[in-house]
Each structure stands twice: as C-alpha cells, then as structure tokens.
Image (tube, rainbow, N blue to C red):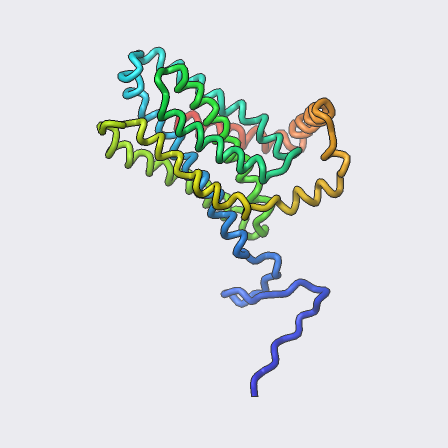
Length: 269
C-alpha cells in the first residue's frame, strides 16, 4: 500500500527539503525562468567583457590602419571611457520605464554598435560608435545586477551576481584568445568586432521570455502617479533621490564601494 502524499497547508508557503536536510520555502527555489534569466544576464555580461577588452588590444592596429599615433589613440581611449559615466542616465531610467526594456535595449545597443565598429573607416567614427557601445555596456551591467538582485531568492543573490561578473571575466579571456588567433588575418580587429555582435540572436530568442521584475511591478502599483510623471517631474524626483544616497547612513558604504570600484577599473584600464 503506497503512502499518501503529504498535505500542504495552502496558507503557508510550500517547503522543500534541501540536501542538508533543512526545509526550503517554495519561493526560495530557483525556477526554470530564473535559470533562464541568470543565463541571459551572464551571457550578456560575457559579451560586454569581450567587447571592453578588444579596444585595448586593437589600439596599435587601429593606429596603423587609421594613420594616427599614440597621442591621438590615447585621447580616443579617454573619450570612449567617458561613455561609462554617461551610462548613469539610462541606468536611472530603469526606475521609471522598467528593468526589462532597459536591459534589452542596452544589450541590443552595444551589440549593434560593436558591429558598426567593424565598419569604421576612420578614428572619429570608431570613437563615436565605441562611445555609444560603452554607455550601453555599462548600462547592461547596472541594470543586469539590479534584475538579479530583485528576482533571485535572497539565498542566491550573491551567487547570481558573482556568476554574472565571472562571465564578464570569461569574456576578457575569450577576447584575448581570439585576438591572438585573428589579429593578423585579413579582417584582423574588424573580425573581432563583428563577432561581438553574436549576442543579437540570443536577444531575439529571449525578447518574449524576459519578464519585468516583480519588485518593479509592485512598486508601480503602489505608486501609480509615478508612472505618469512628466520629464520635469522625473528630473525633480531624480534630484531628491540622488540626495538620499549621500545621507550620513549611506555615506560610508558609498565611499568604500566607490573606492573599490575606482581602484579596480583604474588597474584594469
């Protein structure tokens, strides 16, 4: 005679037994959708890391093909890096328009402008395309981390963001390996930028699968007036929210994380 299945109280969340024998609430599970979400954000960050490294590796070849020296190349690299600061604006727009559209837009944007980099005929149009691509890339990192933090169960958030950042490091390795193979071929550095657009088919495949985060939807329902704000009202609210970040209770952590991020990027750059 078989044992009847246990009765689950519909009022309480269903519990699962983990490998360690402890009970895990149903809402703390990694669902199939969350696995897809983690894959999409991680693969997007991998290509972001790939694209970010190519420019540094390709600078000597750009100078040769475009007929410019180290001084012009150094200035070009500085202008491109400003795109990381410009990304502050679209990341902030994710609070107003949602995480999903900004994430899809940023991934599509940097993939498209990476392909356009391969078609550059001179240093100026190369810098312009790479400037825009860099802004989209940093937007993807910011919004992607927010999406994982809002959607993943609390016990997996740290691991999820770590997997995302680790995927970016794999992108560095991929770019360096492919550069060594194809730098001296007929297409050279242009082939590497064309390959950077390989994420576009993934974006198309996930366009309908990717959902808005539950936390953002709940926030919009709780503050319906915010969704219909004008641009001027949004700017005023933006200013208030920026001031909140610099309040005494947040200042120490903000300064510590900023210093770490600055040091890391200064070293890698």
